[in-house]
Image (cartoon, rainbow, N blue to C red; front, side, top):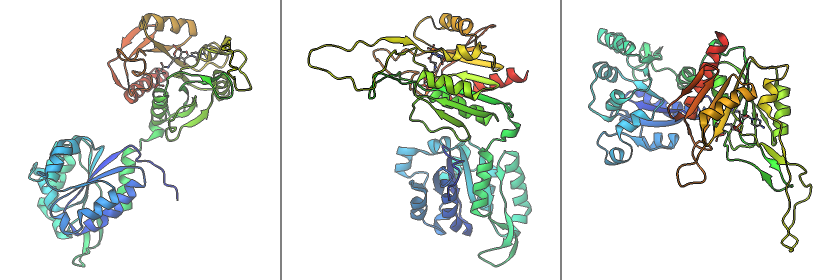
Length: 413
Ligand code: PMT
């Protein structure tokens, strides 16, 4: 059965403490990994009495960490890095003892030190004897932890594995815990600021054929456009991503239409209308070969070079912005290497956009490739009729999230 990769890109740090329910954790690791998560495991000394690090290492596919002063851990990973690199810390099973330590901020082993060092959200799946669960000290600690923002799943009412007693104290089933983790990361799209809206995004390069084996292209990777598509989807929109050739997977939930040339991209964009918002992040080739050869161009030994005559491609952004079916908000990009703001302003009026996201695509000094095109970061100036806002350098994902938030705000104003 194909399982949705709802935890793809997430790193879950699983802290296993010393309770009999530790025997269920290989299943928990498996459930999270099959949803796409990377699972790193820390075990307390007590946990290793119930299940071996070897087993957890095998099911997680990662080294398992047990000691605060493990030389390899300190040198290669370090508890601070383990804490910081997690998108969530999940404690399962969480014993009464471990909860008490956490409620009081004790840090005398790797697991408890990581708990104090992390800024990631924390979820705990308590598991203990029903009497321990009901004890006033545990109740106080539980309230303290809840007050600290710790999410608690379970425990369930049932029979205790070790004593046969029944009552509340049994760790929630691995599937239920995995689903709680999943639900935490799944935004409620129906309440998103773009719920009910259609967002159309162009991304990536175009390939303009010279002959059946050669083409004119550019260095756009599609990362900025794809990040925008993901952010728009997360904000609740229906998203159509019209993409030139890239090596990227379409973000979950996004409808991707794959194209090659500028002409194809224009046709697909027009077909995808109507839309509430259109964002033109694609690096569309301005020119194409007027008459691409249907046969491979050959050297004939005479030294004669083929003459390529170029003709201008349609301007997709301008066509959509000035057409009868114009989306309410149009955001264009401007890839510049000099006078960034000036050229951005010029494109705003010339192309009829509401926003221009101007970015400097000059490669790093001394290089001919790299920088914004193909890179993971961007530094933009957002240009509107009201002025220009320079933004600091941030990841393309953050740029996308903020641009989408701005569009949603303006659209809903
Ligand atoms: O893909 P990445 O590696 O993540 O890099 C991101 C990026 C640098 C490609 C992106 O941030 C960006 O700047 N995209 C626009 C690139 C571009 O072609 O800019 P331009 O200044 O040439 O075009 C201005 C605007 O008109 C753009 O919105 C472009 O999509 C649009 N255009 C251009 C030509 C054309 N024929 N049709 C268009 O729609």
